[in-house]
Image 1 (cartoon, rainbow, N blue to C red):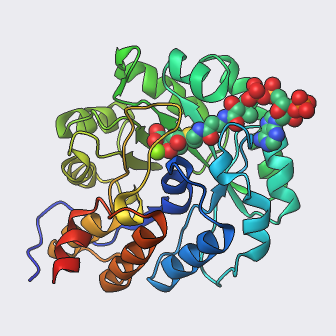
Image 2: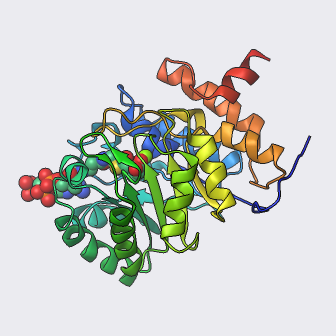
Length: 301
Ligand code: HMG
Ligand code: MG
């Protein structure tokens, strides 16, 4: 049954981050052929944008150290975008050598997380990103940007909204086509989401990226949709986290999001059954059940 609500978009783009945000945080490194199959299955389920991997330092995130090999193996489907995470010029060189057409840079809204995740300060992180964005755009590569710790930070507490807006606007001013607001540790609540989007002056060029640590990810997504956001990051199977923020647990599960959007009559282009089958398959490879509630409910039949 479809029960639409007023004031919501008719269509939502789900920006799938499972192969990157999900697999970067697994205790075991998933074999490259499993990663390639995971991405293929996601495309087959209808995903049109799949964040494939990261060109970060392999010692910082060993789970994604096979980024080059993965891209070589990737069977790129027409109409599907495969962005990768890139922190610096070294990462950009590696990505360009492998024919990447879209990258994402990732900034922190707080000083402490900038140091822990990027080995930089709140200001000096921009010295790292600016040449990356400029060179990528010159090469015809689209650039997305993330801001992490938009709602709170494990070391600094609640993040001032003005601080998030300052960092986010600087990234957009560099020429990033979209800014994804990251609740890295999942502490945000729906009113906070609405206030943050409002502080940006509305939803234009904004996406949202919720981790589900406190069970708020779906509620926060609904608040973002009501504020006019139409791009939502999610991870098939609800895997995910950040190795440099221990309190970051799984991302909003794509299946849980699709269930809600289907009920609201909002188009996503995704096949829920295929996503559930993919999550169940992946859970077998990871040796643990999917944290997605929809996967658990549908797997029981
Ligand atoms: P650094 O140690 O300051 O690097 O790390 P450096 O610039 O001083 O370089 C040191 C050496 O590393 C040099 O080699 C570089 O060439 C090499 P040497 O000359 O000594 O032989 N190097 C690299 N090698 C390969 N690829 C590279 C690279 N860069 C430098 N890209 C750095 C700085 C940014 C590299 C490091 O801090 C890093 O890799 N951080 C990434 C951490 C990460 O991936 N975190 C998870 C993703 S973010 C996230 O999950 C949040 C998000 O989901 C949104 C949300 O939830 O909020 C996006
Ligand atoms: Mg994340």
